[in-house]
Image (cartoon, each protein chain N blue to C red):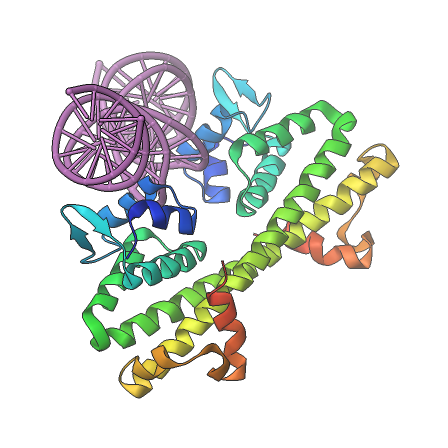
Amino acid sequence: MYTIGQVSEMFHLPISTLRYYDKEGLFPNMERSSGIRRFGEREIEALRVIECLKKSGMEIKDIKMFMEWCAQGSSTYEQRRELFLKQKQAVEGEIRRLEKVLDMIRFKCWYYEQAIADGSEDRLSEMLPDHLPEEIQAFYNHAHES
Amino acid sequence: MYTIGQVSEMFHLPISTLRYYDKEGLFPNMERSSGIRRFGEREIEALRVIECLKKSGMEIKDIKMFMEWCAQGSSTYEQRRELFLKQKQAVEGEIRRLEKVLDMIRFKCWYYEQAIADGSEDRLSEMLPDHLPEEIQAFYNHAHES
DNA sequence: CTAATACCTAAACCTGACTTTAGGTCAAGA
DNA sequence: TCTTGACCTAAAGTCAGGTTTAGGTATTAG
């Protein structure tokens, strides 16, 4: 069993953040002894899951829902699996979105390299899509899609 | 030249957002006729770049910097290229981070599939890392890294 | 005895990116 | 004329996810 200060050091999280998580219900029925929070294995494992779900972009209120399911035992395995499946879709979608963004950014990098080499954007601004170097066209198309 | 209402429809952005972007300096020296904003090609192209940079996670104040460089002409090509190079690194790093998160989530999906099949977590909680199915070990390791 | 620590709460504050509100201008149509 | 619609501003409000502050308790070291 750990105090809030020990957990704060273990996870490199400010004490205020741990109290905030507790207030938001991320540690359902955490023990206290004379008012002082006692973090057990359950809470430590909860924090590991919180870290993961936060990094994946999940909101506190949804993480709270998950923690409540955990507290309810084996009857909620199905919901918990679905939550992770949904989050898997979300993260995969986010990665695909960022790959597209990356194409746009690569186009811009190429664009400014040309502008620097030319000393101006004149040649670039007259350039039609089908005159762009082949490996740049994909970036260009992405860069000008909705 | 477009009015704010037209641009709002073209980009599916609320008028209030366009005014907010303007207030934040994202359209340096945009024209006005008797107080009314007039969006020209410069501002339309700016909005395309704003969309891209926002999607890549850049903050308004950094986008503003970029727009000011644009207004300053060819002397800032180098800075602009560096900004995009930096943003490329940032997005690539974010994608790598999310790939790791994905491993953790895949582990959790697998975990709950087992728990559902078993009807409890008992077997899982006794399972040592080296007894996990091979294709799960990578997830497990990621799931339990810092 | 008292001062330093480590803990506690409630409530106010902060940041970024908007959105809403309240009040005002101006031109066109009924 | 009057009112509707599109525009304008400044300022306040919203939301998430914390952080800071103000004031209090309980234990330990000098």
